[in-house]
Amino acid sequence: MQENERKKIVFSGIQPTGNLHLGNYIGALRNFGPLQEEYDCLYSIVDLHAITVRQNPTQLRQNCLKLMSLYLAAGLDPDRSLIYFQSHVPAHAELAWVLNCFTYMGELSRMTQFKDKAQKHAENINVGLFAYPTLMAADILLYQTNFVPVGNDQKQHIEITRDIAERFNAIYGDVFTIPEPLIGKVGARIMSLSDPTRKMSKSDPEDTFIAILDEPNVIRKKVRRAVTDSEALVKYDVENKPGVSNLMSIYSAVTGKGFAEIENEFVGKGYGDFKEAVADAVIAELEPIQARYRQISADKAYLNEVMTKGAERAAKLAARTMSKVRRKVGLAATQL
Image (tube, rainbow, N blue to C red; front, side):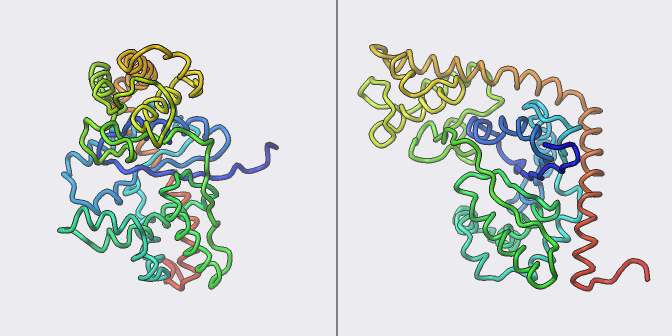
């Protein structure tokens, strides 16, 4: 890349709810550091999204700091990547309102996440839950994002963001960069330890997933209890041996070993030996991050500095886009 060539912009946001788990780490968090080498990256703690479901206020604030500490522990450099709380940049909410006026009810009603969350939280089907995708679109479009790291289950949100941006641009000119999904190398799809037909989820009971901050003895206990089968054969076969295949995916992801190599490693050995090896590998992978997390989370002055500088930098970037949006839609200027 030439020195005067601008880097492409990557935006990613994670909700500060629940405990981040091994699937989050393998699928997203451990890739954040390498991404900052190639792109200008913004990593947002999307606390406004979190309140579509009722939260304990104290717990939510603690979770925000916990997530920021994990970002930093996983290798993000606040001098190279922009790390900030979504709610500290009011332009997110302002742009979301503008985009609401360019988004159709039918589009939002078709969103899979709304249908799923409406079923889980039938007593609290609020407007924020329905309009969640327009706030997500605002998150992305506010920073003229080129790429958004996503999994297959999130592509729908990128598609509606693109639709909204293209509709707005068709009316007012090239205001927004049209974002594209950033699909990384095909990685392990980490499933629930108790039901290997379902993706590992931080909203499920804690014994179904390995949290990034789980103590080694807890990790070992969870792996030992993971569902396998009665065949006592370590073989990768998702259809017929989903539990064993899931543990193999985890082992492969943290050791770099291929499935054939893993199968050969455990020829003639039972699931007990296999599970111990998986637990050892996961513990070894997470221990350095846990150590850095404990150090960073205890340094309140450093966290405040990262939080404050991140909000200031993000607000300046957001202001450029919002100035253009306000002018295009005809909102009154602050000065004549």
